[in-house]
Image 1 (cartoon, rainbow, N blue to C red):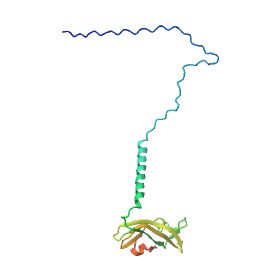
Image 2 (image 1 turned 90 degrees about the vertical axis):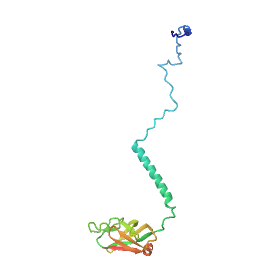
Image 3 (image 1 turned 180 degrees about the vertical axis):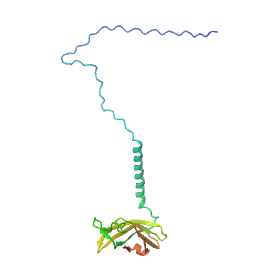
Image 4 (image 1 turned 60 degrees about the vertical axis):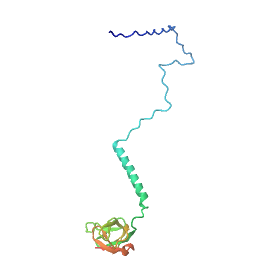
Length: 195
């Protein structure tokens, strides 16, 4: 048995196009300028936009960090004043006086003299408030200062001190604590001196 492929019908060839008669190109008239070279392609109406460059990993990371911080800060700002479950607070107010080695701070206030042993006492020095069990419950800083008769007195105002303690202890810098009753603390009767 031989395999044979049946014959396929042949497709007749395409008829040849009639021969074109040679034509003479039109000559430009005096009113039309002669074309010079091939015609230029038409210009697009709007230039194409430059391809967008993707930010690098560092820029993307910094952008993500900024957006995340903004979201967390926004949520904190919205919810900070709405919490009614937290304890009531007050601002512990009073004064702190340095009586020894006082010097002018050059900004209209005063501070402990340089290399005097009191050079840690100045506007902005940390003030720590402890609760009755010894835990830190609020922090602040020494405020504006005035020098009078060789002593330097600082305003003290520590906001956000929780109410309800039996007593409070207040420490300026690392100079030891001063104890106040709850009534004294809430009435702004803090007063301490050093020197």
